[in-house]
Image (cartoon, rainbow, N blue to C red; front, top):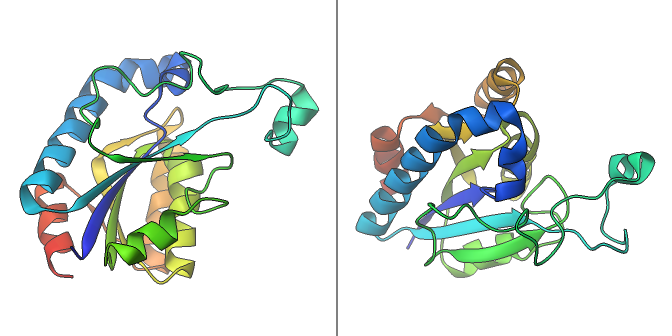
Amino acid sequence: MTAAVVFIDLQSGYFEDPDLARIREPLVEEANRLAAAARERGFAIYHVITEHARDKSTWTLSMLDDDQGFNFVGTEQAAPLGELDLDDANQLSKIRDSAFFGTSLAQRLRIGGAERIAIAGVSGQNCINRTGSDAFAENFRVAYARDAIGSENPERCREALDMLSKELRQPILGTDELMDWLAQA
């Protein structure tokens, strides 16, 4: 297996935001389509979720400054979206925006032989952006699942992904194109 699809933060807590709530259904539908296509091609699937501790030990600086936690372990907020078909995905937990920071994702991808990864999920300008940048630093080839990435700020999301596409040569592709791109590994 030389490719993988990495889904980021498709959890209930993120979809409390009204802008993400509006796109939840089509985003989940496309994520499920992407996961099915990956399974059909034999690509590994990962779902990286954000979980924090109530004792503030995992909180970011902005969470500490605002004294407001989020996605606490074991809560409904931290739970993956119920209609998401990722039960067979390798699940990892993170405490920062990048799925690589403080996790075993890079090691797991390497052990699985992945050279190329597709990234999908939320939010494009934050967690997707930072995961893609760190994947580049880890020498993984990256493409973004255009139709399976959501954001509460679509303009900033487009800007962030456009920058990564241009600067790091990380294409933004539809699901069918993405499967062909992943198969090139």
